[in-house]
Length: 228
Image (tube, rainbow, N blue to C red; front, side):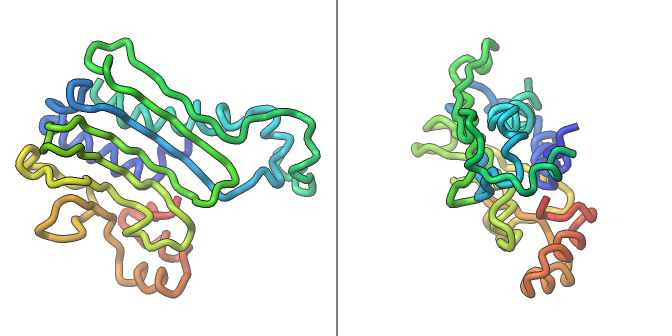
């Protein structure tokens, strides 16, 4: 099983979509969604993983398992060698192996025929982030384009409210008035339902502020931790 399936935000997104199936289903199709973009960037380089990466590349290592799993969540809900490489330098390989890739997919299903699906992944970038962005066509909610962005992970030691969130870029309360929240999640503002974040106990908050990310991650709702 792909370990991305165990990430708290992935589980929360799956729950969010399932809880709100009846509400979201009428707009969750190609008539309303222009694009679903899933992107993973990380600051980590190929140090200690050169031999493995030469045999896989970023497409096999990240895109056809991790990002494909996330695509399935956003799309299909409705429709020992490490130790041996510890001392190997990242510039010793003569192979040409991709460390960044971008692909665009289309669907043969009528309900998704006009929606583009984009996956992107890269190593050794300036920022660490894993996100899903669903871009709706103009007019679905209002005149301007609206997006639903799910932040699954960001840089280590970033506050959980910034590192893990489900966020609408516009007010969707008139079109989607009865959205339910995943267990253990809350709105950032009681009167503004655009941003949803995981709840944390007082102990986790104190640990996070002290920089003890490991303790903060252990002591979150359902003991799943926000930092996976």
